[in-house]
Length: 109
Image 1 (cartoon, one colour):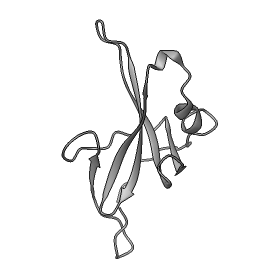
Image 2 (spheres, rainbow, N blue to C red; image 1 turned 180 degrees about the horizontal axis):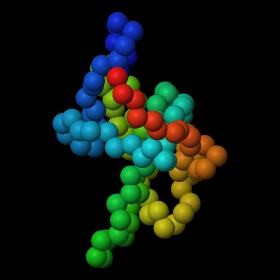
Image 3 (cartoon, helix red, strand yellow; image 1 turned 60 degrees about the horizontal axis):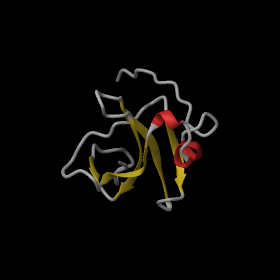
Image 4 (cartoon, rainbow, N blue to C red; image 1 turned 135 degrees about the vertical axis):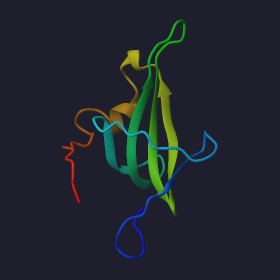
């Protein structure tokens, strides 16, 4: 998160649906940065998918990460079966025309 000295500081991530701190999981090939109307603030939207397992179907969860004081807050925006291929939250933030395009590069200090 930005700090008072004009740099950045390592921060915790917290979630409404999981106790304690955790590491954010951001899919660098499938995310959106910008205004999230459901939360009324700017942030990052990404998705995690749990594959099907035995008799359990695949589950996709769309999360928003927003800056809340000194930590990132994760909020679940949607949970759905990704095989259905049509979810309004996915279409709004993660469709091909809406997601962020980045090229990752390794930086050596």
